[in-house]
Amino acid sequence: MSIELWTWNTPNGRKISAALEEMGLPYSVHPVNIGKGEQFNPEFLAFSPNNRIPAIRDPQAPDGKPITVFESGAILIYLGQKTGKFWPADLRAQVPVLEWLMWQMGGFGPMPGQVHHFLQVENEADRRYGLERYSKETRRLYGVADRRLAQVEFFAGDISIADFAILGWAWRHERHQVDLAEFPNVKRWYETMMARPATQRGFAVALS
Image 1 (cartoon, rainbow, N blue to C red):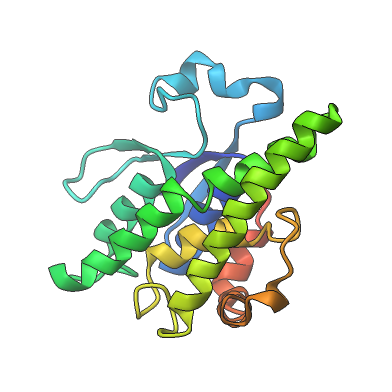
Image 2: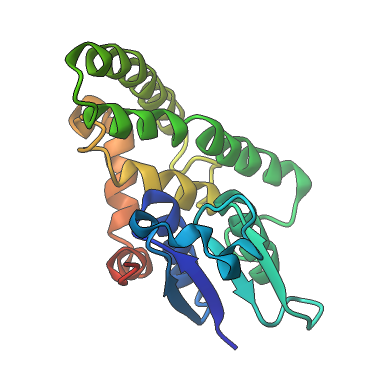
């Protein structure tokens, strides 16, 4: 039975489509046009109360019953535990996966997201202040990632759900006004991830 992916063509949406393809799970896309406010529709709010995409409906959870999950990080953990893929069984090995997943959710997402916002602000003074503040933090986060990837191939050592989470936002590096050539380890990792056939399918599928 197919998982319903309620989403839109955003970094957070692409995290999940890439993970679903990599995990080989059947799914159907249910676009939620956030530009038209469809995230506030009662049907969507019933299982995504924070009115944010993505969210999923899985008609058959591991206990055989339907389940809904909102928040992209929670969805990735659920899918990893459901399939056993890109989610280590060992508790010690889970720690870096969770660390880098939380790093993305708390920083490498909200901060470049603010860059996206301030690029569109019309007032020059407001735009300049916001871009300076959030671009500096975004570049700091790219630097953190680059230092990590100088030590390991993937963020948690082996490829994991953390990589799909981070990839969704690294995919928008040009919009962040970041040249990956300045962060060679991130560039190497990004090109490796985007060369994976399943990941390519996850980024090619229509979400909007």
